[in-house]
Image 1: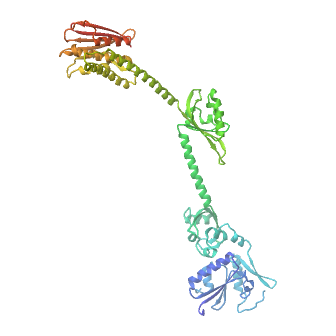
Image 2: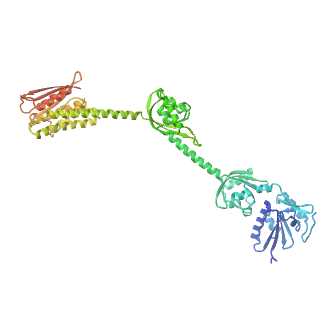
Image 3: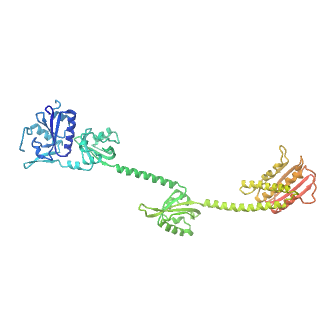
Length: 93
Length: 475
């Protein structure tokens, strides 16, 4: 159903400030730039650290773009919108 | 390196590693996943969590950027959860009211990396709070804002200011009062002394405060103070206690005292406030009124005696005539009494009495009565007698003497003589020819008797051209 859209997974660690900031920033960016064609999945590694392995998460917060391929990763709280847009290939560099 | 269980995901590549190092270096991450044995575990950066949990309201944002950090204290104070606050402009979220232009605050932050001052914020529920705010600009451009809620503190401060204002207002009323308002402790030592007290007692506040209140109590009344203090200790109020107090230089004044116990915040009696009104003047007025009342009584008795004498000496063949004669004499007394009122019972001017009594006999444009003499103030008794006698002489002249004809003339002259004597002379001319009567008429009898009562002498002369009556009085 999201063949054409973005599937994003954000790894956070409970309520750390960067985690909270990353969630808020990601939601805002998606609403502004990908309205209607994205899906966000938030994974709390504090609750389940084992889930870190799937995407080899080392630093938190980390955002993984699962779709469209190829998989991409952005580390940090996503406060730099420009960097996020570039990292997700939403806007040509 | 951790075992990769399922990997359609590439392991960390070179550029990712670089980014990771950058992110850690710039503080973009606050947790790491590490391996403990074979299990991954999350480690958060120490301290961040403490700030997050602190009840001290804290928030952080990039200068001009959205909120990036919002701790439990901020949530508690403003009511916004972190996910509601983060990503929004703090000034928009909290409707911040700045004490200075925001541009100035911003440039101050950039210059000295610090700003502190009072801000007004609006909470989620619409309540406005006042915060004591400290902002710190960190090297990475983050502004860390720590706020302390001072709303309640400010409210209490305002209340205190208001009650202070009221106290000052009361103090100025006390200070400017004309009445002496002083306070003393339970040992009778003066603790306050207003300007009224300075005026009434003559001691300045500086001289009086710290001294025993007995400095204003005369020697023979010192025991009053013990009595007063005993009653004050019992919590009694003393109202309008009239007594005597002593001024700085020893003169005595009559005062009316009102004393009330003064209690401290715990309700314990710690002293007394005393209002002293100087009633010396009032006392003097009361005495004057009493004197005047006695004087009025005395005058009334005299007056009634005069009336009685007038009645006794009056005579007429008909009762109608008797009524007229008595009526005229009483009118003469009434006239002179009006003059006493004007002089507050000191007496009456002789020329005024004469003018009043002889006025009916002066015709328009024709002087038939001449009045001439220096100013003499007669005491009420003498004035009464002279008024009746002038009335008598004039009535007689109008009936039989100079005033009974068209061209007759009366002259009344008086002058001072040695030994405080006054000589009055009544001279009639141009009337019908006069003969000495064979018996004393009623008018003459009244005159001689009444003048005799005030220790004066009368002499009548019956010249052919008219009657002469000389009266000599002590004045």
